[in-house]
Image (cartoon, rainbow, N blue to C red; front, side, top):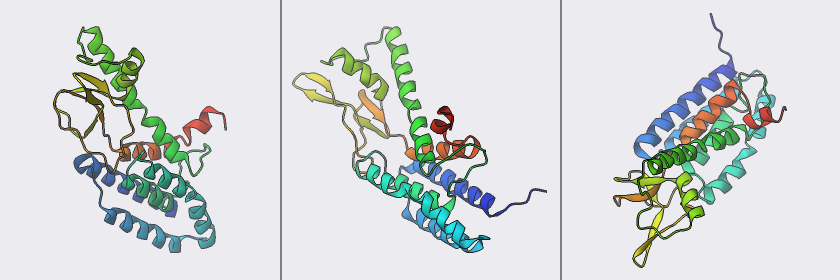
Amino acid sequence: MIELDIGHIRILLALVMLVSATIIDIRKREISDLMWIIFGVIAGVLLFFEPNLMEAALSVGFSLIVAPLVLVLWRFGLFGGADALGLIVLSALAPMATLSDSAISPFTILVNSALISISPMIINFVRNSVLILRNQDIFHDFDETKSKKIFAMFLGYRAKNPKYSFSLEQKVGNKKRLNITLHHSDTAEYCTTPDTWVTPGLPFMIFILGGFIIQLLFGDVTLGLMGL
């Protein structure tokens, strides 16, 4: 029979929170703040069930070092407010949680998540390359440099009926130009124009969930690669 200690309970609750938030984010692209309030309160209550309250409080405090960084990233629009709150609550709910013997840090989940978030760019480039090899003119009517087109192939694709995506193009005279700018996750509007180059607005919560699972099983990917 498997005995669950407070650490395992924290991990299970963190997974419940992240899986629920990811499903909601995929379906609605919006997560109620009530989610973070509930699990934030749970994180606080769990402190009083710790064998060593002071040690647990210090662990949470150390893990929350990541909070200022994710708030800055949110303000710059690199991900949404829900993602920032999710990472902060996660740091309090399951501070420095791992089932591996590998080294981790308060920034491990964020770093792991960022590395996973590169995968859609690779998929976009492969997808666009296949279309070009099939002699499809994916940049029809565009007046752009080759380097900018290659960059766009990583960022997005030409969508017939875009959904939950941000436009990558703009009209300049009779020609189209690629508009490769940062879209703020909380304020940018989704593109609804058919047959448009777009970058997918994938919920970053997906990558946070993946980053947390990697931390549990393998630790910090970058620290592992550096042999630390």
